[in-house]
Length: 309
Ligand SMILES: Cc1cc2nc3c(=O)[nH]c(=O)nc-3n(C[C@H](O)[C@H](O)[C@H](O)COP(=O)(O)O)c2cc1C
Image (cartoon, rainbow, N blue to C red):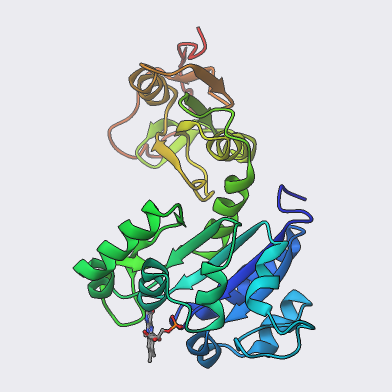
């Protein structure tokens, strides 16, 4: 369980194609122990039905400002009242524009206006919409009003464009939301870390390595970033996603790891060495793939420098 355990999260889903990813986000939030209440805009409800969100969240789903199911008929006030945060993912260009203008013409925008809890938006739109001057103006306005903006990211888009505007993936949104609630004990601190194994090349296709997964280092890097630290993670070869907000410097050998650490260290207050660094490396690395020539092959090793020293 995480910092989200027992938190009441209102998840707004507006009418973008990324609405389908909100279903997975609800699943992840519920798994993390959050109490999730979904509010769909009319557009959002065209992409994914309330049934999906109700089944995943275990709670009633709200769409209509005039919905009489709330005893006092004021879903737009009551839903936000006990919430720890309102997260709108995806947040359309139109929704952000409505928040920027303080409009209250549907349940989701009214909820965003009538609140004293934090509002977080995860923009999702095509590149031109994101880069357009009105959207950029509106995003700056809502930031100025204290709204937190998660993303967007760059990449392939549903419309066939490539560029900025993609909603962050559900796993990353979860990580960012967790980070939102973590006390910022490392704010203003730079943390340099190492993680994973090293790979000491024998020839271009073979090497000596170890079975370090990097999981411990990556988890620590995530925790430090969520605590507000500026984290540089010097990582050996692993297949783990880089935690949100962490700058990863990928390396292979112990020598590369050492020089990347030395380069990152200036200005750092904290160094955490979690990597499983090879004590030895081959004395020489063959330029070409070694051919099988005899029954035994001797590889001479030489000590690696100690990164911690
Ligand atoms: C197929 C389709 C996909 C759309 N995708 C997006 C999108 O990804 N991002 C966005 O900002 N608007 C998108 N729109 C436009 C919004 O649905 C439209 O602006 C709507 O008014 C948003 O209302 P809402 O914010 O209340 O949901 C899309 C529209 C259609 C028809």
